Length: 65
Length: 131
Image (cartoon, rainbow over all chains, first blue to last red; front, side):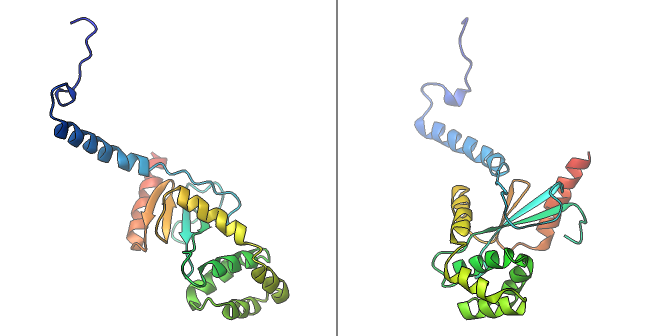
C-alpha cells in the first residue's frame, strides 16, 4: 500500500499489550548503558591534580567519613 | 596516577552523607585547607587518620602548618558549606547515590572497586584515543 509505514510485527495493532510492554522494557534496557556512558560533569574550580588536557579525567565524588 | 604519567587528571567533588556526624565538617575542612594551599595533604590525612571530629581537624591543620586561627574561624563559620552543598546538588542531579563514585571520561564506576577495574577502563579510553 503506498505510504504505508512498515512497523515491526510486535508493535502492530492487535499485538498483546504484554508483548508490547516487554519490547519497550527491552529497548529501554538496551539503551541504558549508552545513557550511563554519557555523564557530563562540570569540573568548575574543584580541586584537581594533573594536567588539564590529560586524556583521562577521573572525577571522584568523595565522602571522607 | 604514577602509573599513567601525564595521562590522568583527578578531580575531587564532595558528596558527604548528611546523616554522618562529621562528613560535612571534614569536607569543609579540606576546603579550608585548600585556600591555604594544602588541600591534598589534608585530603590524604583525613583518609589516613579517620578521626574527623572538630578537634581532630584542628589538630591536622596545626600539623600541616596552616594558619590555625583562620582555619578554625572558617570551619566554625561554615564558610565553605555552600561550596560543598553545590557539589552535593550536582551529585544529586546526576543521580549518584553512593560514595565513592568515579566518573571516568563520562563513564561511571561505583564503589570501592579493584584497581584492575580502573586500569581496564583507562586502558580502553587510551587505546581508543590512540587509534
